[in-house]
Image 1 (cartoon, rainbow, N blue to C red):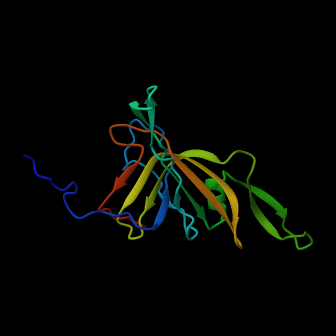
Image 2 (image 1 turned 180 degrees about the vertical axis):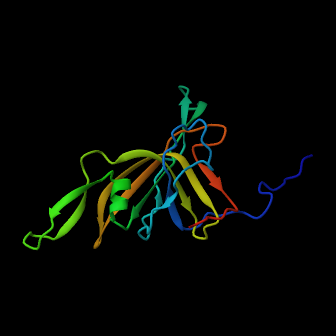
Image 3 (image 1 turned 90 degrees about the horizontal axis):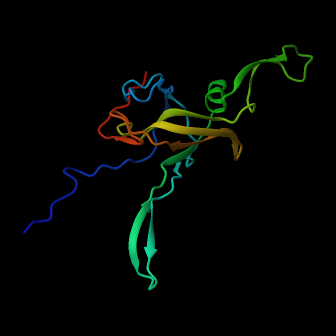
Length: 193
């Protein structure tokens, strides 16, 4: 008779808190890409307190019943993996990355104008959506969740007195020899410059 063993071979692992969000350049070819080949990792900066949340849809079960109301066959309907967060900065880099903004001439270079400004970022000429790898680091920077192929959307948002950028990401299906839709790294160490 078999005895009950433990599912986890060691101490349980818990992904707690958010220590950082890292965005990468989109790979030219996902077929040959690896986690190590993801280029140009950039920490997106401060994330508004309590704005990071899981927004995915749960897996559900559907039943096909007979005339007596008894379940004869059940099947699963897959859910989604998605998150959202608010970047606190509205710097030119953040606006150009997440809102697909462009540098434009402000044309306000003298004190006789209503505002003195030498440059601006223009946004809103296209839907702010793109595909890119994105990673979430836990509060101790020793675990990571990687969505190597994430659909990213963003919009300006006001939260209290702060104007920020609300970002939503949805993992798109990806299964290659080296990358999966969602990858969880334990016993990791984030390397910052």
